[in-house]
Image: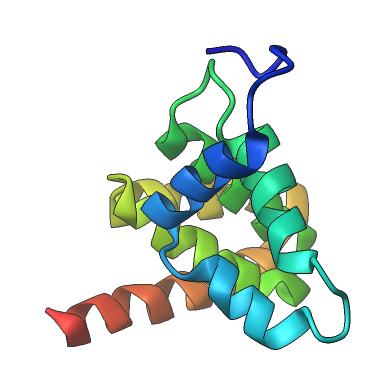
Amino acid sequence: MSLDEPHIDTYARGKAVSEQVNPGMEDALRDRYDALVPGLSRTVVDVAYGQFYARDGVDEKTRLLATIAALTALGGQTRPQLKVNITSARAVGATREEISEIIFQMTLYGGFPAMINALNAAMEVFEAEEERA
């Protein structure tokens, strides 16, 4: 189904995607931010997940690896979002090796400090996985 069709409910579609890759994200955003910015949590689900992540043409794993690459190149200030997206990528089948290689590749675009910061974030996610196992 194309997002160009006017009857598509992008919020519902985004909710389905966000719950698959990041369960409870909307509730966490609502609890933290909606008192300051009413509707922020719904907007993130609708726009980021419903209008971007739910698009056809690229599978979820590829889209999340691209997100990890962009966040890595942007630098250390993206650490919280990196951890969320690394966790989401793992949930849809990305391996530790794939994630690590994508991060390493971003050395060319974000520099060594950005790559090291992103690898540290990835290692925290991987260590948390091991603790849960």
